[in-house]
Length: 275
Image 1: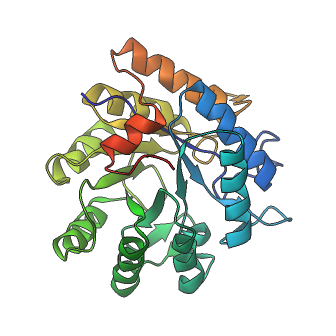
Image 2 (image 1 turned 135 degrees about the vertical axis):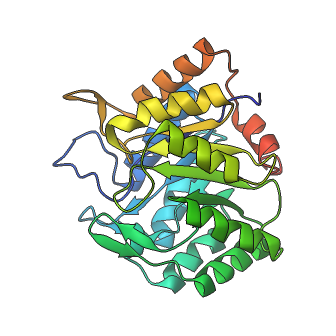
């Protein structure tokens, strides 16, 4: 098995300070939370940014500020910027502009879907444009698949030569409108992936930990963080992203997986060394 890549999704678009005071929302809080998670073993940070009112935005300057703060602290994490625009809250042009910042990775949501109470639009034309922009800027897509049809969408784009190997898949389970967070569903979706493609799993709420653990045991990778789940256990809020990362790292080691450093993660994902 490859060394275990632990990704941390620090903020997301739905948790608010009213839900939990521990979710980071300013650029300074997001960068600090990422650095704390890195110290606990996270090698990738998945970043959303918020405006002054706490609403998710595709603001290049806020993204740039988070990246600068992370690097100024000597942190070599793989930086993964979200292009989702808050699951449909930003224009296509704003979402494409995120790639121009040239992060290590950027999210590639591989299809349209009902997303909670919203409709998250990712048209075939937009996905071709997004893949082309990522290839032009040499940004690795994190191919986020919320159901089986989105894996098929991604494979079609791969077959058009618009995404280079190794193909990095993030299987997302438990979103209302997407695939259910069950072992059977995870096995099925992993079986659909291109041979040899590295993959990771994230799941929403109480299903985060069981699905992370199953992915680790299967040889995949795991994403944790307050974007997906604000609780450490029943009725107990997680105090930080670092607390959630430390648990996944501990489980990984108990299951015999070495933990990937950011340098290891770059090697697994076919990314050049930092700097």
